[in-house]
Amino acid sequence: MFAIRSTLAAAVFLTTAGAALAGPPPHQTQANPGKAASNVRIDASCSGDTIAGTVSMLAPPNETYKLDLSYRGRGHAPWTATGRSASFQGDGSERTYSYSFDVSSFDAFAYRLDVAGEHAWSRTIPASSCAPPREVPEAPYALLLPLSLLGMSVLLLRRRRLLH
Image 1 (tube, rainbow, N blue to C red):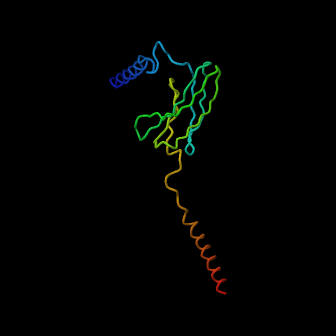
Image 2: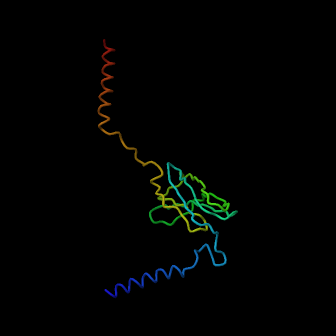
Image 3: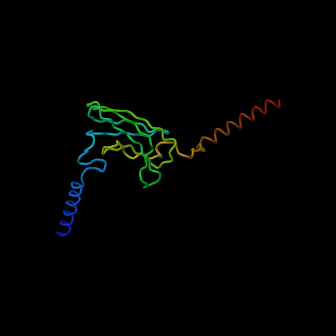
């Protein structure tokens, strides 16, 4: 039991120590710590062939931020840039910026948005939530039977009137 606790404690220590010693993200260095946006929040949803939402952040004045749209072709494939982006300029106050992207030309499994140079991205948006399903559901039989009987009755009545 003591060995399990010791192993667990060592694993937790090594995990947290490794994260602390890892340094800044790859896009930042000690000489270039990156932009100082704080509390970046990306809200996104998909409707039809459009991904739209808002970016809320407190950004220093005159700093420009770029929101990039990425997609995943299949399952666990790497994220690929779509070439679509939106830019926002900070003014020193907390603001909310709106964006919208047309995704009809992509054959994607999922989408994600991220602010370039920041450690902020949206939740993964499944492509299946964007467009309607490929199969159109059929009308239920409970509806088809009465409608077909009504149609047949109308045809019989018309035929009867034409014969008399």
